[in-house]
Amino acid sequence: MCGICGLVSRARDEPVDRAALERMTEALVHRGPDDHGYHVDGQVGLGARRLAIIDIEGGHQPISSENGATTVVQNGEIYNHEALHERLAGAGHVFATRCDTEVLVHGYEEHGPDFVRELRGMFAFALWDARRRKLVLARDRYGIKPLYYRVSGDLISFASELKSLVLAPGFKPELDLEAVEAFLAFNSIPAPLTIYEGVRKLPPGHVLTWSGEEGVELTEYAVELPGRAAELRHEGEGELARELRERLRDSVRAHLIADVPVGVLLSGGIDSSVLTALAAEESGERVSTFSIGFEERAFDELGKARLVADRYGTDHHELVVRPDAVALLTDLAETFDEPLADSSALPTYLVSKLASDNVKVALSGEGADELFGGYYTYVADLIAPRLAPLARATRPFVELLPSTSGKASLDYKAKRFVSGASLPPLERHHAWKEIFGDDARAELMVRRGPTHADPLDVYRQRYALTEGAGPLARLQDVDRAIYLVDDLLVKTDRASMAHSLEARVPFLDPVVTELALALPDAMNVRRFAKKRLLRRAAEPLLPRELLSAKKQGFSIPAAAWLRGELEQFAREVLAPSEVARQGFFDPDAVTQLIDRHVSRREDLSRQLWGLLTFALWHDRHVSG
Image (cartoon, rainbow, N blue to C red):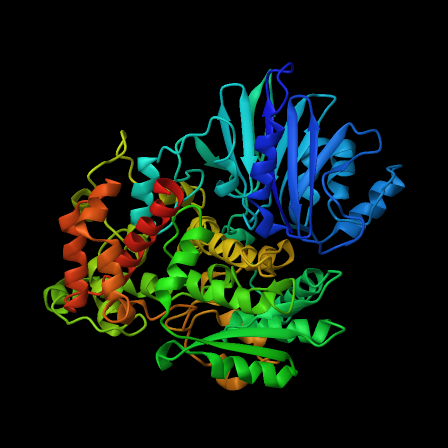
């Protein structure tokens, strides 16, 4: 795992600014505290910070081919690098290391940019082809690892994180108002947008090539879509469950490859518990597990985590989170250099810190909910068409319910359900999770983008690709392609790398997704039963009480904290004078949101967490 960055100029007689490259590279030291390196040759400069995981002694980056014609820097891990190494060596390529990064150099020389199709892993890399004077950027098919880029005049710059890219020569931090509006809708910013004008995220499964003569060319090399009816698997549930269990075992085995100890971030839910069970069975050493709990019992899953840890004899570590969220929110504003208001970033940040004191690599369960139907919203999607008339009739009464502070409380879910039940499928699915709707954004924003683009268009574009697939599979695909990529994976990457911890996600592996995308809707969700096949696959591995437990999610008591310990802090950060100084939102509208939440008229914790996150981010990364 590493942080990478670079500068390439179209003007061959204009040498790269090495001092700027070094500043960009040092900004990524948290992603790679073990080593650093540069490749500077005239118009091109590549930088890397390394977290040594494989071939600790020999894996120094950048890595070049024997004749120096091709040079690469990589962030991530290639899990099938040994097989690729053997095949390329058989074709005559000479390797200097056993590092997984070196297969990128020789794979490119053998096959060109198409070689990325053969990679099994999580990665973002930059490759300079000196003979063709061409830069190649690539990102893994699931978007596990990040990569940002900017083309300005004769210069292309790129980096693993924005805090590095903003140090490129000539960068001016102008905010993209369409990205701000998307943030208000989703509490995250969907690709290819970023918070800054002119900066883009390289989408998952894409290769970007750039040369002075041809400019930028984007090519999609991998797109994973749910199967149409004729392509679905219809074997018995028992047979498919056995197959899924062995596919997960294969993925976990691959994700355990490392020259350092590997642990598991164990939340107590079924996803991380399955990973813990398989890792314990496949690892030749005792597995370390790490769990976070809360004083508020409704949010605490430590008891479930202990059941799994005890069953498999793991070296188990726990931390109980108390609401010292003021200091933690400041830390998160430093960690996330683009606004991200997923409140589960806080426990993810803390459990990553806990793990980093003991291991360099940890497995995490991201992707399972989207692949196997783990969200309550999927149940709502299925029952809404039948209950829509009742929802319309009861909506005036449901909206009068007082707001409580529980985790996804009944009043909160009921209000969301009646507000969205009568909408078309995609809009209905978004309504379950929407942060600020169209009218709320118009009331809140004092500056809007020139096109007033509807943030939901990014959902509609993805949804259109899956026509012919099952109704639920299409919504799962939207979540997997957008919410998972631009929220959950961003959260996990930044929170873990802030502590120099490599987080690996075994559910996002072709061996697993190939089966998941071929499952009929009912194999995942039927009536009120979620993750049906995954639960069946986990039966031999996990305690019975965990298999039947309700999903809790990795969330925090944000509603209660914002009515208690965090209220004063929120009022200070979002004071009218502060909101007016930043110049994006209407101060009176923000104050009204706080008052409505504190008076228990509504649960507006998600909206307030987003505004609080944005204000802290802005003061750290723009005003600061």
